[in-house]
Amino acid sequence: MTRGGAAKAAHLCAVLALLPLAACNAMAAFTHAQPSAAASPAQDQGLAQTASLRTPAALRADPNRLIGLSRQEISGLLGEPGFVRRDRAAQMWRYIDDSCVLDLYLYAIAADSPDVTARVRHYDVRSRNARPVTPQACVSALLSHAPSTS
Image (cartoon, rainbow, N blue to C red; front, top):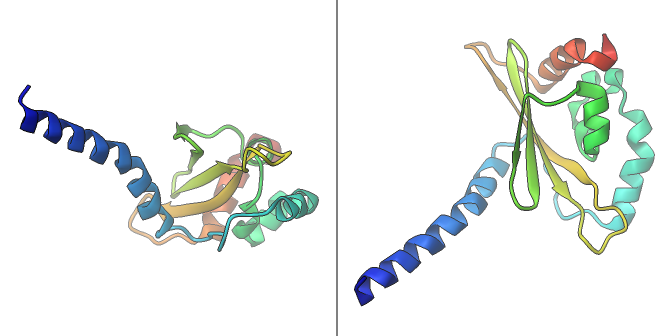
C-alpha cells in the first residue's frame, strides 16, 4: 500500500469508528423525553424510590414514567423486547404493536456508581401506518398485550 493509500485507509477507519456516535446523537434529536444532564447517584436513588409509582396504569397515563426504569422493571411491565441492539454503553430495546413501535434507549450509570444497572434515559414512538400515534396510545397498546398485564 502506498503512503497516501495508508493515510486514506486510516482516515476511513476513523470516520467509521465515529459513525455509531453520530447515529446516537441524531436519534436523540427525535426522542420524546431526554434528561437535561447526566443523572447523579442521588437522582438515580430517587428514581429507584419512585419506581413503585410506575405501574401499568401510571404508564398509560404518562409514558414519561418509563424514564429511569431498569431492564428488569421494563421486562416486568412489557415483557421481553422484540429486538435488542447493543452498543458500547447503550442498548436499544424495541417493542412492536400492530399500530406503533416503541424504542427504549437504556444507558448504564457511571462505573464508579454503586448502581451500574442500565436504565431508560429516553424513548421514541412512531406509527406503523399512516395514522399518527401518541406515546400514551402506543404504551397502552403494548401494555395490553404484555404478559404481566393480561
